Image (cartoon, rainbow, N blue to C red; front, top):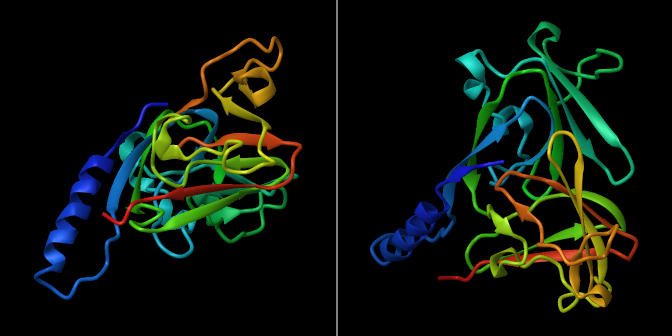
Length: 243
């Protein structure tokens, strides 16, 4: 998945905010930006990379104007994961919007905050969704994303792309949490899962079938993946400097 984002520009906005504070009564250092995330036809795991408001309601987060032909996002299924099962939401204007795909009764739209992935199933052609909002965490703050024992459909709360070993990701590792020493990261390419296993006894990232060394996961902004461990809960902590 390839994405385009204005995170660098957002950093400049933050620098501008620092400068303007000396001349105004503005005390917020929120970094505001947007990210264009492509959605492919079929199944995919995605995440909201920016905090729009307190709820991140799907009606607001999903930009319906960017679908093929500009006709609006219609006729798809979205599912959130609670660690044991998926909770499915259908969307179709012929049913009045959001509905339960099993009963076709109306259903409240899901909330899709940063850090929590969701499954999108659609027969639409590829389209781009424009996510807008604040970068989390804000400057000088730290966010904690709990990763439960078992499986979590997760994503970086910071809008980052690249290898998860890059320092900015602050991806969980044994030095951060004594319990965090053996886990899988599964990325879905639309047809199959790419399973990447981390265990210090094998020297780090390995193929779980051969235990040969492999590159760490390389993820895109707006991409979610399954974090799977049999260990106890793990906290994924991400911070931004105050300046």
